[in-house]
Length: 437
Ligand code: PLP
Image 1 (cartoon, helix red, strand yellow):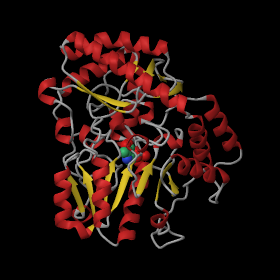
Image 2: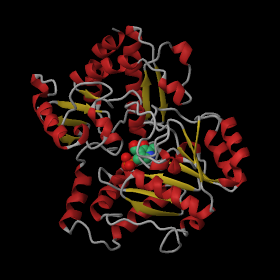
Image 3: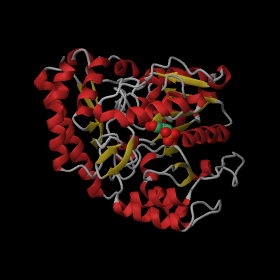
Image 4: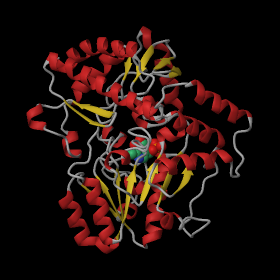
């Protein structure tokens, strides 16, 4: 029986029911609050920057469905586009115009020549790997510890997000043969990448990296790491795959590409481009993409790929995501980072805040001097986790919904206004005290 208090009674009851029929009571692990304890809140509705649970509690939402809700919840124009699409039918299994418009929007915003729509970020990275292997005729893939690319078997090794949050040591259920061709290297470590290419250069199909990692907390690339990766891939006939599922259409009109301008061979997208529906994509160089069926021989398919409702939501979201929206997101993010820093400073809590555009995370470290900038998975792992849990629950009690893990980015929406920021500021004082205790 989950712990019950007045303001969580209905969530607790639902969690008990859910646990009886669903492993851990959730359909995606980090939703379960395992890392912070307590009862996960069952939401019933969202409006702008707020979400409301079954007990009637309303929270300022700094998770945004783990990224997609860039414009906030139930944006009237997105809802109208979805309702119009639904009323015309929900799936045809044929090409539709909205798919073309969404693909054009993605191609217009990013450096990819062609794009294939899928239904989740996992599918996008899985398909990009297959395409890279099919294109190069090579087997090995390089990934970085702490980067999460969805639950693709070959990419779960030393992954971030829920894998690190739950402390799952390896990848039970994934055969050794599946990961035998995955080379896992420390992030931001150019020497390690050079060494891997010296040893396996002619066997490496691709290097895949989060464009700017957000799944071990926000750990941006340093010393032109992406440019280095693109160059070493090119020199060795491997493909450079930039995973922008989290950063794409969130950090800038294109994503992290809009910040460092490094040209990948393949890119993956998801989250924002689905407007809250299951839509994702992978795309890249025309000569590489032409290897995909039916043009080429690398097979990839999906019953609901390019679904008309999902593409309508994604298209409406991207069309509304103007330069002004990105400027507002940057400003809001900077304000929140400043408020968090001020509150923690006041209570003498050591922390490091790292950002990548409007994405940021707060690391509760042993000491700021000892931590310095966090560059990799090992650095991200050296956090004082009980401090985060105390901070998280104090924020939740005060009506602010943060990612229930110390290893996740905080997501802002364009719907956050001054009232929401004052609510946040009020919540931060007791939360900082809780973190200090
Ligand atoms: N890649 C990155 C960088 C992600 O952050 C995620 C999800 O958090 C994925 C891939 C997987 O996307 P999905 O959860 O839609 O399968």
